Image 1: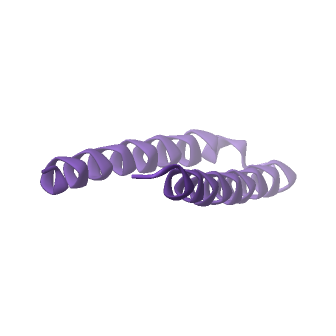
Image 2 (image 1 turned 180 degrees about the vertical axis):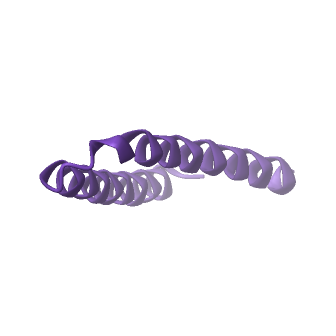
Length: 67
C-alpha cells in the first residue's frame, strides 16, 4: 500500500473513531441526565465488545487477503 492510500485509510478510521466516541459520549451524558448511571457498564461493555470484534474481523480479513 502506498503512502497516499495509507494516509487516506488513517483519516477515515480516525474520523469514524471520533464519530463513535462522540456518540458514546452523548449516550453517557444522556444516561447521566436521566440519572440512569446503572447502565454505564452496559454501554462500556458494548464499546469494548465492538472494538474487540472490529479488531478480530480486521485480523481475519488481513489473513485472508495476504499474498
